[in-house]
Image (cartoon, rainbow over all chains, first blue to last red; front, side, top):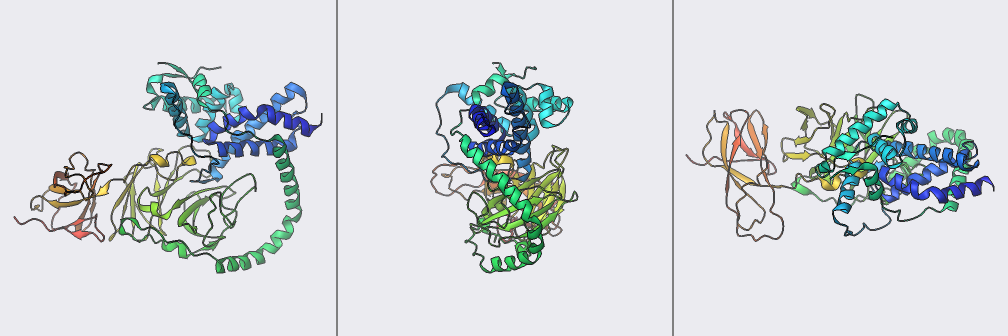
Length: 174
Length: 360
């Protein structure tokens, strides 16, 4: 199997997970797709160097590399992007009946988007991607202490949210 | 109820609405590598030619510039910005996207909303902050204003909003640490039309220059309330969260100043030493003949040497209302200083109009 074929298999296998992470980081599907594609396009020239062609172990290394590129691009876009435009390919979803649980999810995602970018990234990496504090620090290129501070502030902000206050959000450590 | 954040997030994130095409990603990656190699090869030549070429191109672009669309004028204030007449050539500032890699301010169209600039490749420098960030303003043909920051050593961010938002939601951009290290905002850049001379927020009043003002943050928070004032324009109050906001999430939640300007008159002749001013407030909007009690917002009061300018707004009832005329609603205004011999002006009128006290 050549490197290009291997790269395409990797994209097909990981795109769902990467897109969902990107959606949490950016807030809409169009930007999320841009973000994932940008990260993959930038990773491809390094594919052999980062071990993408070296089986499962290499795939995990490539996965971490893509994830790191994606988070850094998301933070970079925060500075570069013409904000004020959120292009969408589709009409907004119609309200979906889902009861209180669905409402809680919407409120949580909405509250997450109000966090500063690095706090948001820490929450996504720690509690959605399930990274350890050390791995999160490696992705964000900061210290473990900084990750803890961001996580603590972010959780505190989410708990202060009027509609999330009674959830007693638990961010269990790993 | 207790919620494990990991579980909640897993349940909250929907399935992607579309899937990436791995072959397309690969094609884009190859194209990007080819482009980068080509760009590197010709960069030196282009740079040498650019000095001559850009100025010629700017002239040509300005000649074929499209006229701006008519601008909606809310609040009876002409939304002119004199700074737009003073433009400089600007490039490499603008929308960032993977394909094409960078869309600059001289690109046509400017962004995914198909906006085109009235003067492509040109923008007006409205503000340089103490930390070295420059803010540039450009006008698009759909009547929007595009404000973008330019940080030394690269990086820019910006937004386009309709010109009509200047005095409704406001055009307030968060100013951040240009190095990106600090999370807390350093302040906000406020864009205002001609006629506005002061922006007050965080307990400080900042003079407007070139249609913009930088209001500093207070204790790491952006000012939560901004008051825009000028000698012959109505006072406007803006309240956080402002537009544009990061990723535009909070813009739709902006509520103030949705309240409508109301008429008022003193209920009794004021004395020079008075700091309490009983007023009668009359709502202009249709309210089914109901009192405005409980819906009168905190008035905005500007103390000038020769006048006290009072602007009062009332939250509208909303929905369909009949218009039999509205009763005057008593409201007691507390002033922070005595009126003295100054005139009372209604800031809700343009220009602010003198309100004659009732006969004793």
